[in-house]
Image (cartoon, rainbow, N blue to C red):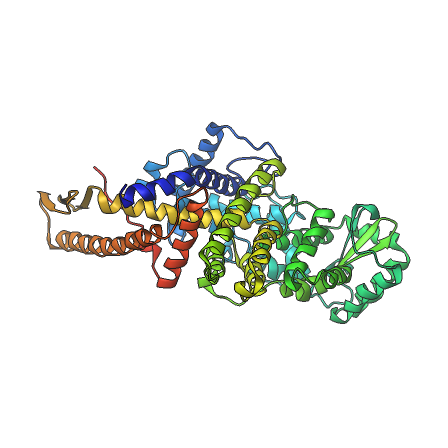
Length: 557
């Protein structure tokens, strides 16, 4: 069996998971922008392929009508022809970028008139307002009349007269939460500092502390609250919890509750439905994030910190200290140092495994990773967890925080290391989906590299009165034909394409060589494909390989 057959065998073993992962990613963004309508939180989320294809077709139609306004436009050439029934990787990356809630897409750079008249931009704004929950905005290619009013309400809550700033903050939810909870106006709503929700006390499994101790832990964090009038008000609510009931239905209170969930969701610890209720899942997610921050051996400290964030007022009324949570507790759960090289789970896992000295121990950890992936995939199907397959700033901040707790795998010992892997995939709920996305992309690169390197290629340049076409056969010989009349500019353009192809061939050759080297080290087995994928990502990251060099649009006959 040659190395192409071996690589194909690895790709084939992962094909089912990769196809499923790609479909879920496409389903997620198409639903986010209203091209399809599904309930991602139901266990049975099967959808007719016909409706899915209609959503893909509608996106492509709208994109083709307005693509000029976007930077880094999406390639709609051969890749689309090869993927008529689903989104291409280029399209998927684009849609994931424009639906980012962590500042990856600058919607505020467009005028209000352009957002209103551009179907895709209108979908982005209505998606943002819809997920923030407080404005009653449905996702649509046309802006509702009250969209402008919704932004004006945000402007009022953040003490700003800048419409563009309000639009910007809808795509920066972490900063939006910080700005909203920083309102120092003594006359501002208590909902800037504290969120209120109603639930029976028995619904929550909070640390069993005495009532006086509960208040001591909760009030100890009031020193972080800058709005002193709100501290007095929350004290009154403790004495008369019914006084806070009017705040539970207020738009700002709904928005702040949703921002708690969204920030936890983006970090990877919140698996449930985004709603207007703080329930056991939300509180458990806060605890998971705290436990990650403090370490698995510091559960008592995490429990005390949870009591500093959530408090039971009585009369089935609960509250969350928003200023403390958004400005101190939640940022403290993350390692927000930017390191783009570390923005993959694969590199972190590979570094950890490779720090082990025994090959048998390394293999044991790889098997544990594979088992966690299989188990998590089954759990997702059963529970219908909220899909979030792309990691962002908060997610990788949490991942860095997790791995910073494990400095030395050898000292940790193999048993504790395997438990660490189980805990990672258990507490960081979206870990599996993000990891599969990374491996899917690197295997896609591998298949593209093989196809490009070992197949016939046709490079064509169209001029005003003629064309130049160069055919490369399987032995890398080439024949160039000129059709009609061409000029020096056409010849120069064609030569630049050939130079680019030559450079790409060298890059591809290097890439395939690295794949071959890895395959020689990895044993074939049920989890060999995940090991190959993760180690390949690590290798490419260490060598500074530019994956974009493999993205080549070739002309077909």
